[in-house]
Length: 406
Ligand SMILES: C[S@@+](CC[C@H](N)C(=O)[O-])C[C@H]1O[C@@H](n2cnc3c(N)ncnc32)[C@H](O)[C@@H]1O
Image 1 (cartoon, rainbow, N blue to C red):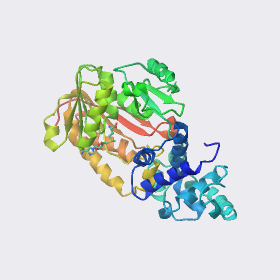
Image 2: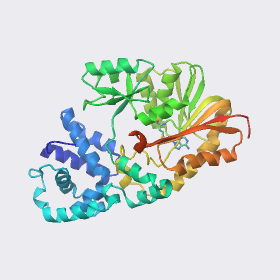
Image 3: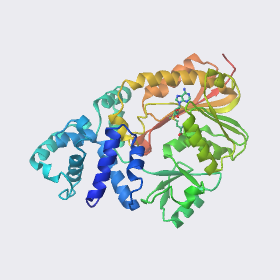
Image 4: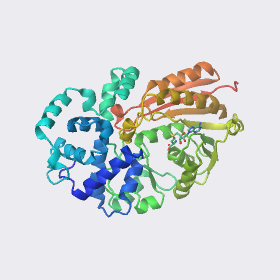
């Protein structure tokens, strides 16, 4: 946490980001890029601003409660929330705009009450508490607390161009300090506040920023040189590029998605990474999938999901989403699993993955699929949870096709 208060300029940038996210519905990353564009800021100051915004977003309901305002009025009262944030974190807020509106005795009274309400204290909206309790029972409490922690920055060494040890050394020469992540072969955790994307190492394609949990998912696909591999919900290719590294540029790696702009971004990233065996294909209709029937050694289905495993990285979604999205996503996941699994050849492996920690999107989804598809057999699954790992939360299940089936 910060040791000194924000200055007025930085506090104004916090306000800008909050307004973009809460009033205009921009994702947090976009809020940062718009607010920081053209503004001269030292990397350390930028890191301080993102810390304050991140923390405010993770516990927005708590800070609103302490400021005695409604959640829907958070953006309008952003300056007051920053004052509250300083007080809550034991920092002097005296020089900040709206410091004069801070009512200490009311704050102390509300703080005492808030401490008794664990769900509010952990920055959890009611809809999320309900889902978490229903789906995870007693385990939810630890996950709720883990999801309140700031997200760490992890990198994946691009095996096509370097090794993790070499990358660590190259980064250190540029003043970027990292440490090795135990249990994740390709991952480094960034321990300094250095900007990553202006580094020579990044421009040379030596790494991608990717959560360690996400690296475990792509690692489980175990794509080998010469294989035919499909990443069917590839997005902008976080995992595709990892698979390309596993394949060492040999074989065929097909990245598919329903959104062309994501595949366009993937192409740019693949170029920088030197991933020359990546082909992109838009899924225009079910025919795109049917044409690939029984052809792939590996199919990764990193399906659209609630994102409830990655809330510490995307805390803004707690205040945007509702529980109504979940059943819609569960149905979409079921359809994708049923239809896209056709691409796996006999003896090939299907990897189903989400960035959710909720069983309804995870093991229950897999069990339903296996019950209806006896030509697949279960190999193993893994719940990568924030409470157990400190990483973002993911789920993965591996299944093998044992016969052609339907
Ligand atoms: C969890 S994200 C994928 C993230 C990506 N694999 C990565 O590691 O960066 C899910 C992706 O599924 C895509 N998607 C949504 N509906 C789809 C569908 N019916 N078929 C294939 N992809 C779909 C979304 O556009 C999104 O990019």
